[in-house]
Every structure is written in structure tokens, then in C-alpha cells.
Length: 226
Length: 328
Picture 1 (cartoon, helix red, strand yellow):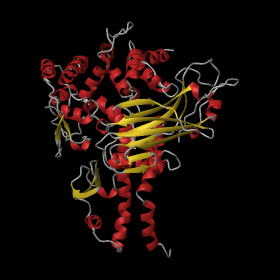
Picture 2: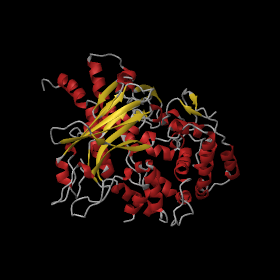
Picture 3: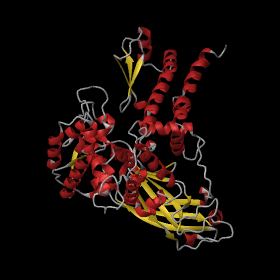
């Protein structure tokens, strides 16, 4: 059975070796997620050391974790529960998380614990290694493709074509709204890293004069391109 | 302190009165008032309904409508936007005109939502908005597009998980080795934070800091000399918390709320915000606003003064000085 921690972990609950340093209970989610496809994909690629090559694999891991969780019929209430994502990162997929960010577990220096426990607010879901992969897939993978994408054939491909898109879009509180998320992915299609940051900042600015939350992604896309 | 400057007509926030109430409070844990909302004493286990009432002064329609035109509440949608970054949820509910008859210039709009606490974490912020239903002819200085926001209420916050307050007395103190030779102490950032006194510090310094007495002259000197150490500790903790609020550089992210920080940083930063922006209606928002525009001023100029207030530096100094300088 897949689990979640009884309480949300903080940076003080995990030591530099990525081991929990306090007694914290795990609770059952009621679903058995089969991580074998994810682990097999990791086993095939764990010889890779280049950060760029690892980033290029994000799309494959994103799709695999999405399919595994969907098939498990996990209750929706865990999808945005960081305690569940913390459990995955520190337990079944810990080795992947260590590999993805080159974490040196033998060092006593403060580690990138945010990659396991997430952190505050929406940024936390983007920093947690596995929710970072899952959430874009959940929001984009079943969306019909738009005609004019240049970074891939689908919104999902376009999103993962440049790591900056994940950083800029997912760390914005606007992205918690699905329509704004989709519009943002469309808007940054074909842009370079600097332009992506600028466009997301621009969308943020527009949110002070347009009520984006009540708009469709088509409408948001239209005003962002005006 | 920063203030949002708009180059178009926008309703005054004082013309929006948002009120919230929670149904069936007898079946829920205790609820306490906070400066901008409510906090549960413990996380509720059952779903509960939140009712909204947004009172809008009719005067806003004169303010946001171009001259020689007429608009009233029927030309606008009224929404509550509710956001919880720790739950990764951002939703809206549209309000409907209240059946209650208003005898003054205030128009009321009502709505409600059901909250299942198992799906929500931390806090939820609620803000009321008036939004244009249709586009109208452009007019300089007015927002005329469909979906334009013409005004909003103050933010109201409900803490689903109780606020984890940090009390300075929770700071632990111990003797031990510290990395810097000849330094007196090291702050270990943990929960609770720990002050490690250098076990190799000079003999009488250690005697003074280990002194357990109270009410005598030795205790008075010990407390006075220890006060700046505590101020420094507050500053280090607040500074670490503030850095955690800042977005990763160049990612285009946003400053997060101190409520999203782990204990003890959350309450230390909130305390510092209250001291730094004591004149603001919402010190937490004032801190976020200034961090967005000028984090250096907050970190390098405001913070070190605010922590002196938190650490009661004047009180400890005066207590000592009045004994030895009374007759000077």
C-alpha cells in the first residue's frame, strides 16, 4: 500500500543523508501504486550523468508516474497533499530523486531537502521531485492539442521542452488554476528561457487588472498575446 | 512601505465589505479570531460550510464607469476568489444578489462553499472581486474590457491548520564545540532553535552565562549582556525565514507568504512583519509587497531594528542602567 506521513515534514525532520530523524507515523492511502514502470525506466537511465540529459527525460518520467497513479485509483484528496509526495520521494522513489539532482548523501553539508519534502506553498509542489513530474501531466496530458505549437505536438510535450517552463509556470500561484496553467503553456511555446520568465511575469501583472480565474484558457491566451 | 499605484479608475477598498461565517460551529473545534480572519484550534475532521456576504457601496459604479454612461450592479459579476497555496488550490465562487432588502446605498451579494478539511492544508485566503460582465467602448483611464477587475475587498484568511506559534522561550541553550575558534556562540537553525555556547569561551564568561539565579545583580548583568545575543538570534532566524520567502532567482517565481514557512520561521517572520509595518492594516501583506520590490531594504535596514524591539533590548538595558547610572 502507498502511504503518506501523519504530518507534513519540514526541513528539520530530515538529515543530510535523506533519512528522517524523528519518529513520524505513516498512514495508508488505501491505494497500491505500482512504481515498477517508473523504477524500470530509472534503471535503464541511471548511468546518465549529464544534467541536460536528465532534464530531457523528465517528460518520460512525468508520463509514467501519471499513468501509475491514475491506474492505482488513488483518492483525489492525496493529489495535492504534500505528505503523500514526501512519502514517495523518501521511500519508493528516493534513489531517483537523489540521481535527478545529483545529491551527495555522504556529505554532511545541508542537502537539497526541498527536493524530497517540497516546501512552502505552490513552490513546494514544484520543488518536490515527484509532484513536480505528476502535476503537469495531470493538467496537460489529456488536453486536446492546439494547432500552433512549435515546441512539440502536444501541450504536454511543449511544457517539458524547456526546464524553465516548469520553473516559471509552476512556481506562480496563478498556475494553481488549470485554465491559467494551460494558457501559460501555450503562451510560452517557442520562447527562449529569458522570454519565458518575462511572459510569466507579464501574465502575473495582467492578473491585477483581469479576473483570470473566471476566464477560459482561450480568453487568457488571447489577452496575453495582445 | 509600498503602495499599488493604478493608472485607471478603481473602486476604493473601503467600499467593499466582505464578511464570512461558518455554519455548525458547535460540531467543529474552537475558532479564534485573528487580525484578518479565523483560526481553528485544531484541524476540523468534518466538512463545514462557509457563507460569504459581500457588501458593495453603489458609489463604486460612478467611480469605475466612464463619464456620460450609466452602469449598476447588473453590469458586474461579484466573485470570491479563494486560494490556498499549501493545498495547491485556487478557486472562485460567483455571488448572487441578496434577497435582503437594503435600505441604504450598500448592495449585498451572497454565496457559500463547502470545505472538506481533508483536502485543505494550512490556510485559505478569501478576497471579493467586482468584475466587468461585458466589454464596453474604450475610455481613457477606465478598465472597459470584459473580465476587468474594477475593485476588490480586503483579504480574509481562515487557518484550517492552527497557526503554530513559536515562543522565544522554546529556544534551547547548551555548551559545546563550535566551528569558529574564539567565537562565543553559534545559532543552530533547528526546531526549536538552539544556541550553542562555545565551551572554550573564557572562564568567567561561561560562569556568567551559566548562572541560574534571578533577581540579583549577577542575573541583571547576565540578562543585559545576553539580550544582544538574543537580538542577533532573532535576526538570524528572521533573515533565514525571509530568504525562504523569496523566489529562486531568475525563475519568475513569487514571494511566498510567511504562513507557508515551517515553524519556527513562520511566526518569527510574522512577528518581525508586525514590528516593521506596525502602521499597516495588514503587516504580512506589507512585508510581501516590499520584498517584491526592494528585499535589500527589508533585510539590511528594517529587520535589524525590528528584532531589537522583539528582543526588548531597551527594556533589558534600562533595567541595568538604572541601577548603575541612577546617580551619574
